[in-house]
Image (cartoon, rainbow, N blue to C red; front, top):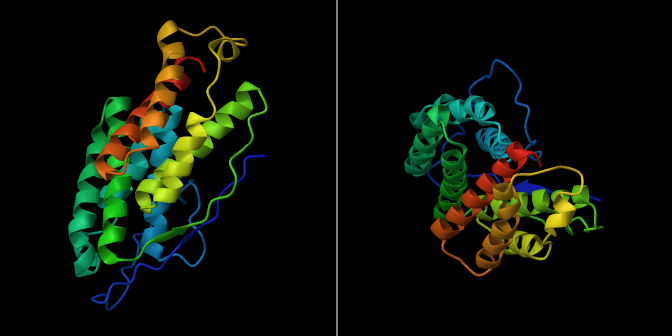
Amino acid sequence: MNAKPRIVLALLLAAACSKAPEPAKADQEAEATPAPVQTHPPMARHFEEAARIRDAIIAGELEDIREPARWLAEGMSVIDYPEGWRNHVLRMQQEAQALVAVQDIGVAATKSAMLATICGECHRHLGVGPRIEIDAPPEVTGGTGAHMLRHQWAAERMWEGLIGPSDDAWTVGAKALEESPMEAKKLTEDVELPAEVIALRSRVHELARTGATVREPAHRAAILGEFFAGCAACHKGGC
């Protein structure tokens, strides 16, 4: 039921790029959302590590952010990249370095969304980037599990909307989130939750309604960061 979009990342080749930089070897193989085949090697690793950060934040697992953030910050030198990429790579590395030491999941969520935005700005600047193909979202069948799968699908599409950048991915994700509100009694039928966690339910859907109408990347990043922080708070609060 949880249809997974297939993302085909275009090769990031700039005119000034005479050779592709070699990715640093990791001690352990990254356990992350795999990048599609035929992806430029450094960009494939960027995608995988950024996805690991995203997933750790949504789960509320602050310590799991540090390893992928450290690779993004230190895994390759800026000078290993083509000249046209370097300013964007430096900004990305600065955000990633801050994530290595971050102690607050809300701050981490905001920085994760900014990381995705920087990727999107680089792709826009170079005139190439991901081609995102979107399948239908999971259906909401009434159960809490199906509802959360739809939330997860929406979070991933909005994140891809920043990375692409893709207005279509962002908008379809926001609308899927907006269209799937969950009654408080459904959320708490199997578990007792604090009142502040239950209140997040309404806030998430408010963010979705706003998100469906905004186009400025920084505004979208702020919305996604708050959405991710809400997911983390809910999961750590007992959801």
